[in-house]
Image (cartoon, rainbow, N blue to C red; front, side):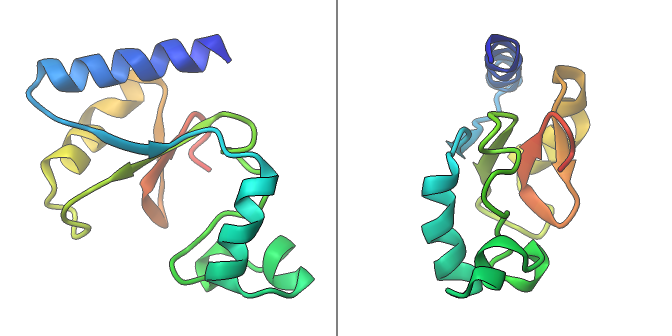
Length: 115
């Protein structure tokens, strides 16, 4: 989706202009790549893979076919996950301007839908 790509590029450029380095770990991820991640974090049963709430996985892990599979999300790496990381703080203050919203239970996960 070119609109998402343009928004993402603008977000990254704005962060860099403010002296913030955002380390994007990945965006688009088809269901075929999400299934092994769910198995590793959630369990191997059909329920674990396709139905278990992400919050019950360790770490929380999205179900296959969600915002990553639709090309609507990106995960960022933060050195500190306690809310003190400058990149995280910058995102909370600026990402909405570029159409990205934090998924409340996964501070590393930002999407165009907040999911």
